[in-house]
Length: 375
Ligand code: SOE
Image 1 (tube, rainbow, N blue to C red):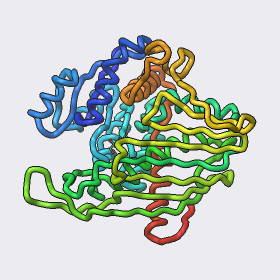
Image 2 (cartoon, helix red, strand yellow; image 1 turned 60 degrees about the vertical axis):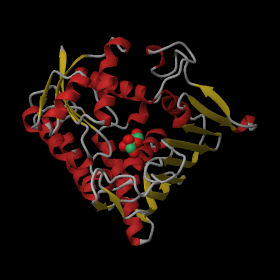
Image 3 (cartoon, rainbow, N blue to C red; image 1 turned 90 degrees about the vertical axis):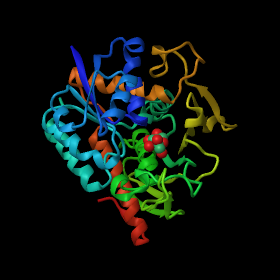
Image 4 (cartoon, rainbow, N blue to C red; image 1 turned 90 degrees about the horizontal axis):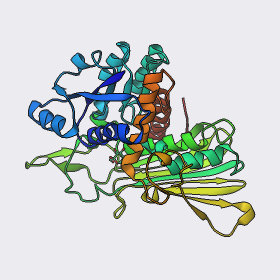
């Protein structure tokens, strides 16, 4: 059976997912066969060029016509376009893979998660948190779940970028509250929150995040529109920080920013337990650093490229490192396999909603100037 895929969005994420689909038959021969069937967007000319480049058979400028026609619908559009087409697809019984954050607001994320629950387990609704599919992150999860770090006491997550340091950097939908929801908080913080939930969120580790305090800041209030003299207001945060309290009493701190000069896509996670610590950096994504308290003489660097490391046997011999794009191949493999077999897929819309609840609480805390509990 060949799965016909409809994809809304052909820019950054469209390219990343189309590339992943193209790699599947070569490197994951047990993945279901897929056909990049229809590419959805607004402008026919740009869409046709993109469809040729990304290997799609056809184009459509109306997602309504696509959502119940295809076997799987990918929603890779800007955040404000996540809800309506995703809900329509799920109501038509079509599995959906939606980019993160799940929606601009908690209310919209709630509706999406509720629709996904009603659609049932055999209509997977995935939220594309691709960093869960880094082999070193999976390796870290194994260590944590085997109890090797003991009781989890403290976690730290930082996602630093610098593409808005320059006040003349152009305005985009990512700077607009209506379209994006929030700025660094939603775009980057959603990844960090999801990774922490994935790594330490189970009941026998730290559990869910229960209380937060947060602070959001915007440094440049308006930005030039590309190709004109106009400027538009920036209505989202350039940077955020937050403190977390987990169910088991563990504490955490988060940072996300688009103005950290010198940091391009620098996502780091650190976990400290009673028996040891671990740290991961996206800039060295083939490695995991682990310290055990019984050999407390500095971190050991583990090169996570052995054949028995997660996903690695599909690629190259040890040391022939993987990159950012491989995370998309792995998540597409897992998601499309779940669609074909009718198995559950995670991260799903409930995971997207859980991340959104934390982001929303961070915003509420910033507005009120006090620590808030998750609702
Ligand atoms: C832009 O900040 C961005 O592309 C995010 O939207 C992605 O989710 C992240 O992986 C890289 O940076």
